[in-house]
Length: 61
Image (tube, rainbow, N blue to C red; front, side, top):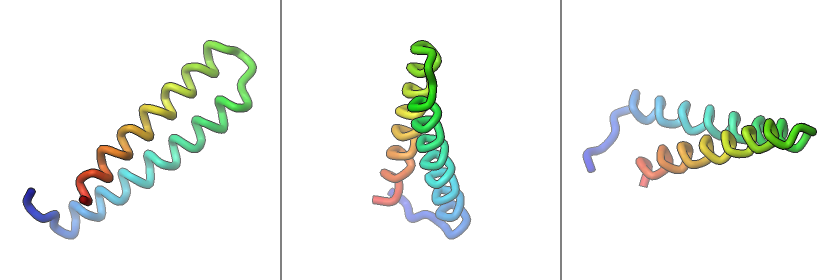
């Protein structure tokens, strides 16, 4: 895999941080939610954000 330049690395860090923040917020929303369907939607969205974050992290290996 070719090496990342400085701008690509900064963008990757930004994307990882954004997805991590989104996942944490979505988990919090799911914990506070009473409606089972909406709770499930938040949980799935949190998992999707974590999966995307892991894909971005794989570029750093």
